[in-house]
Every structure is written in C-alpha cells, then in structure tokens.
Image 1 (tube, rainbow, N blue to C red):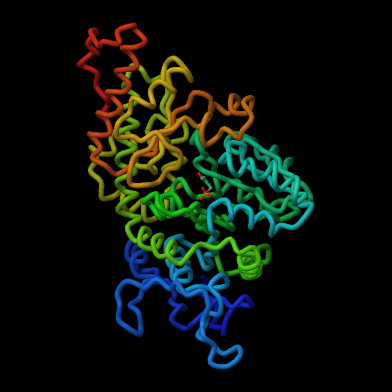
Image 2: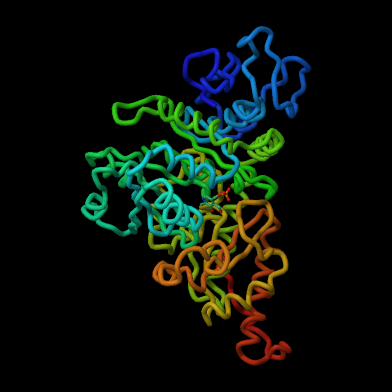
Length: 462
Ligand SMILES: Cc1ncc(COP(=O)(O)O)c(C=O)c1O
C-alpha cells in the first residue's frame, strides 16, 4: 500500500486507495505504536477492533466501474491493503509496500521488473534460493546476468569495477545467510550513486527485520522481506514484501517502480491470501517485543557457545569480539538504539542484541555438526527462522544445498550450524545446547555412557 501519495480513485489494477488509507505515518509515534495501529483501524461499519477477514473473491459494483475500491481479490483485497499499510508503518523511510505469496515470489518479481539483458551485482553469500533464482531462472529465462562479489571485503575500486553499463540492481543481504557477514550499506549506496548505470540498491532485511535495521534510512532504494520469518513470526505463513520510499529522486523514481511492481503483482497473480495477510498483520503487531527477546536470547546463547570447549568458532555480530562489531552497532535502527539505552550495563557486558541468528562450528567439522543436531531437544532440527520457537539446522545440507559444494566450502558454509534463537526461557535454551554439546564431547572421547564427567567449572561467559 502507498501511504503518502495524493488520493486517487484506484490503481490501474483495481487496487484500492481510499481516504482512510492516507494516514501519514506520525513520526512522533514509536515503533510498536505504529505496528499496532497503522493498517488496523477499527472497522467503520461494525466497530470491530480487529479487522474482519474478507474472503470474497469479487466485489459488487453499483454501476460499471463504480465500486468501493475493490473489484477482484487478486487485484486488491482489504486484508492485503491493511497489511501493506502496516508494513509501511514498520519499515522506517517507507512509502510503498507490495506483498507477494512468498519471499521468493518477491525476488522473482523484482528481477523480472528489470527487463531482459540487465545485470545484477549480488553479495556472494546470498540466501541459497536467491542464488538459485539468479543463476538458474533469471539467467536462463529472463536473460539477466549476475556477478557475485564479496561486498564485505571488496575494495571500493573492485565494487565499482564489477558494476557494468547494464547493472540495474545491487543485491545486498546484511547480515548474510548463514555466515552472518556484514555489509556496510551506506558505502555500497555511495558507490552505486557514482556508477553511470545508476543501479538501485536492494537490501534483503529478512534477518534483522524492520526492528533492528532500517536500510531505507541508510540510503537503500528497496527493502525486501520474507515475511515468513520474523514479521509474521509464528511459522504459519509463507509470504514476502517489497518496500521502498515514495518520494522520488532524480535517480530513483519510486512511484514508477511501485506502478511496475503493482502491475506485475496482479499480472503474475502470486498474491498472498486474505487469511495469511490477516495472520501476518497479527504477527507484525508484536514484532518489537519478540525481536527484543530474540536479540537478548541470541546474545546470551552466543556468549555461552564461545565458552564451550566443543565449540570452535561462534559468529554473532552482536558479540563485542566480532571483528565487525562496531559496524553492527552503528548500523542499528534508531528504535533499536533507543532499546539499547534502556538495558543495564550488565546485559551489554559481552555485546549487544543484534537479531536472533547465531552460527557456529563445532570441533570435528561437518560430521560432528551433523551428530549434534539430533541431540537438541528444544531447538527443533528444521529449516526456516524467525519464529517464536528455536530452530537449528545444517545449511550445507539443508537451506544452502543448492549452492555448489566448492562455493559452500569457499564461503565457509560447510560444517556450519545455524541457530534461529526463539523467545523461550533463555536458560532452558542454553541448557539444551550445553547438554547436546557435552554429549558430543562424550562421544568423541569414546565415553558414550557418560562416565567421564564434563568439566563443571566451565563459565559460559555471562
Ligand atoms: C534471507 C532470505 N531471503 C528470502 C527468503 C525466501 O523467502 P520465502 O521462503 O518466503 O520464499 C529466505 C528464505 O529462507 C531467506 O532466508
């Protein structure tokens, strides 16, 4: 939904814009207030505080072409509109939000909007499904070429050198999935603005969610989310969204981009259902409280893991020992900065909450990592992330299996364990990990019966 453009009767595809949708986001309202109230006004006909679910596929017209803003549910639906308005309220700097039936459908639509013979410069450690789409679908069926660059470490000249005459998009994830590499978004934006082809800069903000990061405030042109993850937050909806500003600049015509994506949304028909939109909106209302706990739990778990003898390496940019911790800290959204100010110094002794994802390697490599996962009882061995329940997985064999083995090896994905830290009681999660890691050590020392007592004086660092 578009919030700040002037009222009109409707989009070309019949997508509704009514006056009540033109709520300007109140800058004075905080993140959670916006999450709860924008897009969720009481129903004008019944007074219902929670929006009804509009399952109708079609809408009555009083005369031909005269309707209340909705014609056919693929083109526009009240629950989808409401969710899109909520998303504009959540992602700081946004003016447009357009939802799709998955994060992957969002990726596909954005890439298709570039047109044939375009070139995309992507971060090398990109989500496996995005890599698969760029290399196997966009290349073969859309004629779109991609170059993958280590945007964390590449020098400015190397990034500029990789931008071609036809580079229309730079694709960033930060932190990347699953090795949690950090990209300096303002630096890449500044380089993109220098390039002749004026590529748009897109950030897949799924991992941090609009709570921890506000890439549009850092100059990015487009943010995408797999709403399947933190924004819905309850592992019961698959959905995605593209979100971007509404005020156009000479280089970036966001209103035209919105028209193009809205047209493709209707033409492809990869739209989310009314019920899923209703669920995702309900989930989004608690995003801040969930994200705070995800972050605090992840920080505690990362600190614990660094102290366990069976763990070789822990990656969590929130840890003060992470090489790019300073970048993680300065890149936080204004609302997360405020949250940090409310935390006692003792909580921040080892770092800061920085989303709920933690990756680590155990001693003994991939074989030990694979042996560890079934030992966990509270962390469920499963793909995906961002739900209230904790999940653990082996990216090389699961979410990132579509990346060729040599590239997985080069990126450091082989043998890596990825945790999506949920919002359960954190000490229960720590005990779950401790018990599984202790069990691994017992096996390695040939004492599966547990006759060798693990060291009892291991400090987990907090
Ligand atoms: C970072 C990231 N982006 C995009 C996607 C794709 O989203 P979806 O599964 O909703 O299609 C995923 C899925 O795991 C993801 O982790």
